[in-house]
Image (tube, rainbow, N blue to C red; front, side):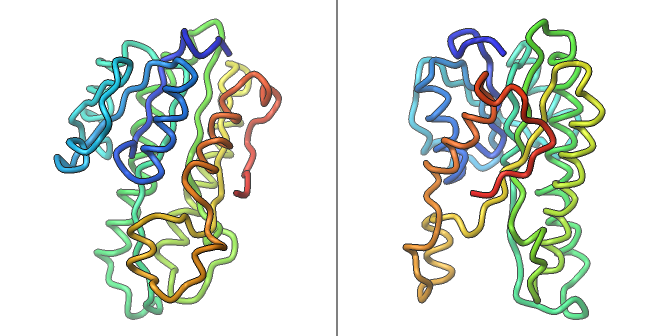
Length: 226
């Protein structure tokens, strides 16, 4: 991997609570950061930076992912951070619309962005790094969260498969596996929870940055709990 001042980093989901922390962490290292957006209010709330480029794109569609790559003009690091959550219902009571929506947000976005970014990474002399955002629910499979857990389990499978397929091209693929992330939305949705046990986005961002650094050059196919 090359040093931060020479890297272009794409952070999909970069306008969300975790994504903003990830984008900020890479900017602090001197990277060029490209963030696709689909919700105008979230894009407007993003702090402006001379090395930050915002691109309107639906990255669940190949055309949207390709448009992000056209702006980035090559990429060394891809963070697949688009995601969504829904739960609280047993399988018979969870509508197929929920299954489809979570698959589209959590899996299809990662597939489309990886397909778009890999050709650039595979021809680069320094290779590249992809980090996906999985979830502890993919491993624990708690009751009432089947659709969410299954979509994140698909992210785990995607991570390991991409790592195996690209190991000879010096492209590393890993996933972070958070428990509950300490975000305003999660606090509002679970007001009686113990927030002190939740992980701040900035701490997860530090792990993601490490996974894309030379210090983790031998790590690929990993599922990193945070």
